[in-house]
Length: 75
Image (cartoon, rainbow, N blue to C red; front, top):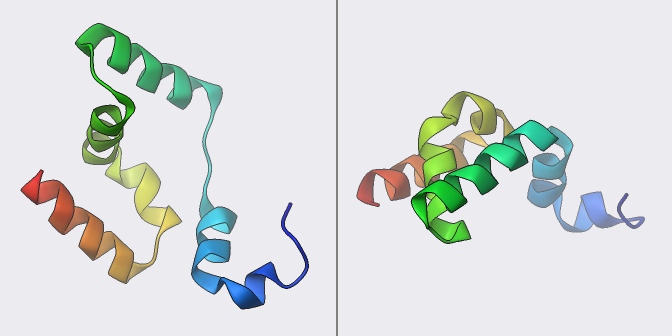
């Protein structure tokens, strides 16, 4: 749910949220990774992005994908 006018005011965010999909399994895998590796959420997020590109790449624009990949390569 978003407010009326959100799509017009924030088209990129709207597109992201429209494409975003997750599950309890994905969340549980992230939490397990954090626990087993004793890392914080930011490190788990980087791990998720590096190992699940086929999932999250559909959530973002091509430009955003390129920027994320560049940042991950530097991480």
